[in-house]
Image (cartoon, rainbow, N blue to C red):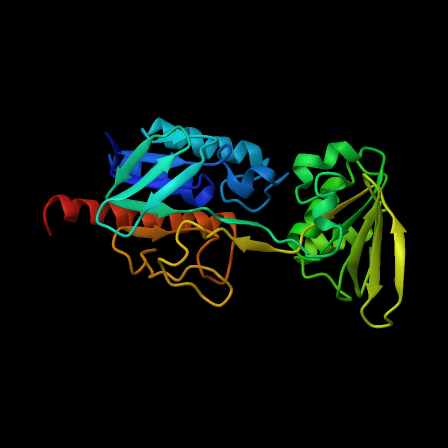
Length: 312
């Protein structure tokens, strides 16, 4: 027998957890599924400085815990470290098969699976992932205590995580393809003023080299075409994200970059299927915009479920 819910939310980042808070508070029987622990990208951010209501910086892990605790307080059920092995989202009843051979279903789902770090596609990247290459400063920064490391990227994530990494590394060298940062001015200025941070402008990675462990980073100056190898103890890559749309691929409309197109209420063309957060096509992606998406999706689901029960 399938376990029935009013709404199943896939993804426990800020969008999914916000949806869970609103849905469960509206007394919808709410289940949240996540492949890891709640928080999404928020939990891998060392500090959040611009979330409303916090005069001081707050750790991403602490904010993630607050979100999940609040959702559970209102009655949402959160299942952690879950693998979805099958799903059917096209019919009036949406269903999932889970790794424990559980079968769950609901009339509505909110897909809030977010995005994953984008890879460079450079030779040696896959070989040295986890052996000198990382995509998460919060996760792996402490392993590079006293080391000399490189960061690829020049946006907010690259610059802010470079500043975080100076707590551990002896030296952080940022390699950026342009001659200026795309990060917000405050963070950019702080990075440029840091005695531990050096910047190599107008350059891109061309290869990761080593035997069993990453030893060198090969870069090319995009203007002069000069190629050189830099000795390194580790490389952190922050060049954007790719939407995680596997659950809805082929089911809903996506834009040319692979993000899901939705209506203003987060609905898709499939009745009962809603999408929220970084997986959705939109201009800005912040914790606050994900929270807004999750809130709107939950309110729309509340009306959808009510209308369905009433036979509207």
